[in-house]
Image (cartoon, rainbow, N blue to C red; front, side, top):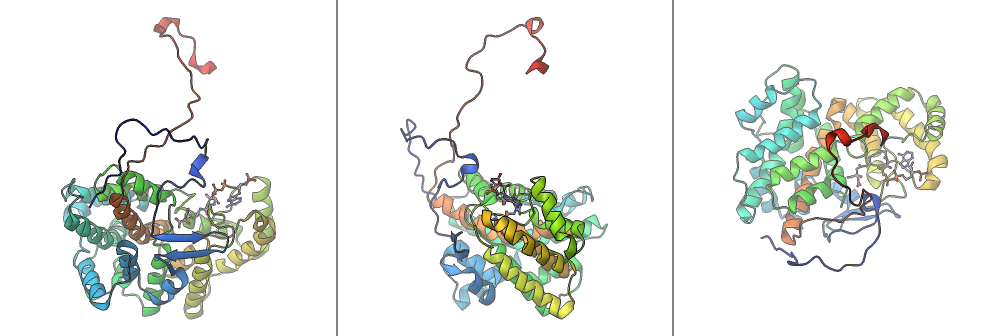
Length: 397
Ligand code: SDX
């Protein structure tokens, strides 16, 4: 299961590539999971275009594709869905632990803690056992939504509600979160959002997952590491900040002055820009369509006009630098219409991205070499010890 392509002995005499902050453009692994063409704005999971998957597939079917490399046949999909459904419940110990979390804590911190705690229930060093790996995949895909929904009810002073076995994956999450069964359109649109967020090659949180996986630690620690990385406002945390920004702008007429000031003060526009894309993120376009579907049925969110006005203003000013809306720009408007609280947008992103992180975890184990990059040292070369009374104030440094 685990193949070590560890080159033992002395470090390799590899040519220096010079400093690359953020590893921009530096390939650090080979992967067959996701392909992005940032110039054309194309995204494929295992070779399938994202637009087709978002239109035709389900999140669990896409999860199966990402993790095992092929679309499941009907029996394989039914078996996978059944396995996930059977493992949705979370131990009372985890629920009781979450009841000790401060209700004011951010749900991403609650998720990172509870995801890591799952490792306490299952033996750690069995990752060379294919059944352990399979069981870990099922447990994490099944339990992460339950834990996100549980913290939402716990922080309101309520007891979490148990998953409903008669509801499909996305409908069950929305039920556990809102305490009412969602209408079919909302459940379907939410499921399509999960497909869109499931995987995106070597983004920061997936890189965290692979680095953590490369030490051969348990998969729960791998996912906890990735959740912590996704939480940052430059990454998955942006979807929450986009809504805050749109509310600050307030009306479409204010979009131009907001952008003028942001450019003047070099303030980043949240939900814009991407390390890979030089055009509009294809996921943003699809999410815009999903938002419009919801607005047609349940009434439009006036923040949508603000978002469109900002996108239009930014087109001429930031487009020439290749800065366009990314996946986080419209996703919050969909979640808001679905009644999901704003500080749960990133945990929802995490529910989806667990699929991609697990796919990369398995792939890393299949051709592992522990990540240990080098550095360019810029500190003091060598200094002589000084007794305490010989030292001047460090404030001068
Ligand atoms: C996600 O990697 C992935 O795949 C991530 C993701 C996924 O699915 O996993 O797609 C999900 O994280 C999407 C990104 C969400 N984050 C945001 O929306 C936050 C705002 N965006 C930026 O912080 C930024 O665009 C990043 C972090 C997304 C990308 O940063 P880079 O590639 O390091 O670009 P940079 O910061 O070096 O900027 C290059 C130039 C700078 O201008 P100059 O100093 O060269 O003149 O572009 C400017 C930046 O100021 N710029 C922006 C901008 N993003 C970049 N200017 C205004 N607004 C922005 N959003």
